[in-house]
Image 1 (cartoon, rainbow, N blue to C red):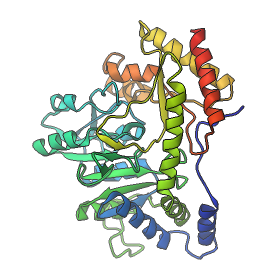
Image 2 (cartoon, helix red, strand yellow):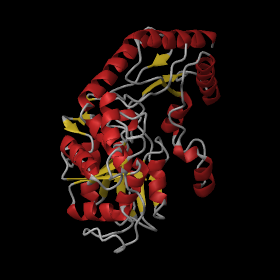
Image 3 (cartoon, rainbow, N blue to C red):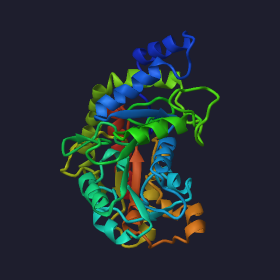
Image 4 (tube, helix red, strand yellow):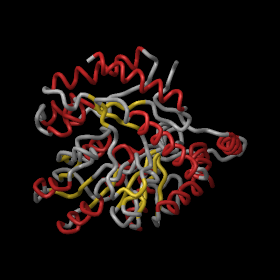
Amino acid sequence: MQVHLSRPDITDLEIRTVEDVIRSPILALGPKLAEFEQAIADYVGRKHAIAVNSGTSGLHLLVRAFGIGEGDEVITTPFSFIASSNCILYERAKPVFVDIEPDTANIDPNLIEDAITPRTKAILPVDAFGQPARLDVIREIADRYGLVMIEDSCESLGSEYKGIKAGNGAFSHGAVFAFYPNKQITTGEGGMIVTDDDRIARLCRSMSNQGRGEAGVWLSHERLGYNYRMDELSAALGVAQMSRIEEIIAKRERVAAMYAERLARVPGVRLPYVAPEVTRMSWFVYVIRVGVDEPTPERQSVVRDHVMRRFQEAGIGCRPYFTPIHLQPFYRAEFGFKEGDFPVTELAGRTSIAIPFHNHLTAEEIDYVACVLERALEEM
């Protein structure tokens, strides 16, 4: 049996919507782009939404729009996809890592204040695996110190923290969603900036479009910009997907519930923890942990790697989620990071596995994953 790690949920609606654009004369900067932006803004409860070609591009534009630059520091998490840190480096600022909570794998707010210096300009929490960080606590710290808060919501479209959607202005000055094919909704590639700040919205829209001004004069460029635009085909796919967002999230909730029920019977597996403040979990991936209770880091890695090997031999997709950013070769070389710098992050990095997760998973496939996992752990 082959069980894919991820798979988008595309129906005839998406195909027809994209086909309509292909048959039209407008393939860029068209009405579907504006419709998709409005759909996201309305869903999240934001004044502005600016579509871009990736979540990474969106994060970069927010960092730049908020004036973060050389000599500035941004406090963030080392347990994330690398873009949440790279976007800071693009503007020659410095990411300052603090460790994560052991249960949620999100940035630990209790450690943030000790990392603040006179050079700190912003805090950039990440909603790991779809679970919002402790956004109210982090925002209170940001306000107290006069810092910008940028929420990396690339994995959490539809999640709610204390009844408020991830990316909402109740918590952050600006946030970014992403629409890679393994996300809740997809545009193939794509991202969306959301903010209530008129100035930030204007800057992000301009910079995403080669620095053109609001009038959109094609060869008039008011500032340094980038080709970060989302095309009309991608936006059309996004419009169709957003019309099904509740259906899609419900399907993912069903798959997560099936996993929780089946894997609860497998000894040695830690299931994902969802904090009580997270009033709705919009699942991005399903990440389990194995080998956590082994006596040494080496043994923890051996157990995790053995399980992944058995998955791969059985045709089951899997990935280590995540490799800590501070232990990536470039970050080691650039900043001198080493093992032991962020022990909670490193434990998560040694023991976490993303297992197959998408809307189409069947009970039979989930049982197959569980059986292979159980046998692999028995072998250890």
